[in-house]
Image (cartoon, rainbow, N blue to C red; front, side):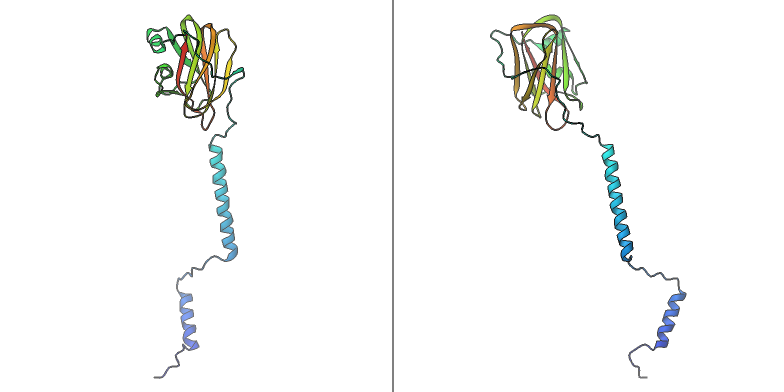
Length: 210
């Protein structure tokens, strides 16, 4: 039987009617306005998620600073014949106690253990204030401080002396404040400010000379 190579219109009609009678769903791509709507919805979801994430994260209130005081260089020399107090021994004997504005991670005693590689670290509090209480009055002639992981500033204050402030010391370098004639006190407040990045202040060492 000879055929023309084309389906007669009759057979096309039968095929179309058969498809209409079946449960057949033609999956077409969204038309343009639907695509645009989906894109807008996605962008809105991303913006909403970003705003929610921002609300969860504490926002910075600006870089912390030290309270005012008399500015000094922090590059003083230790007075001649001044003797370094053995702070670990005084702690062990109960002649010295330490208190801070926040518990130091690792222990406050690590800030006075005469080991530069150990440190007391504040838990996200900046500045980190450590107060030393002596059982007897000490004639303090110099205080040295070492902080690491950031440039830092620091301040020191005795019971009846003006507050002295050092603005900036390079990360990992010692800094010294001195009273050549001595400064008598039973308490000494040392405050260290971390200048860069986060607010976890590292106090490697505090030394006191009498």
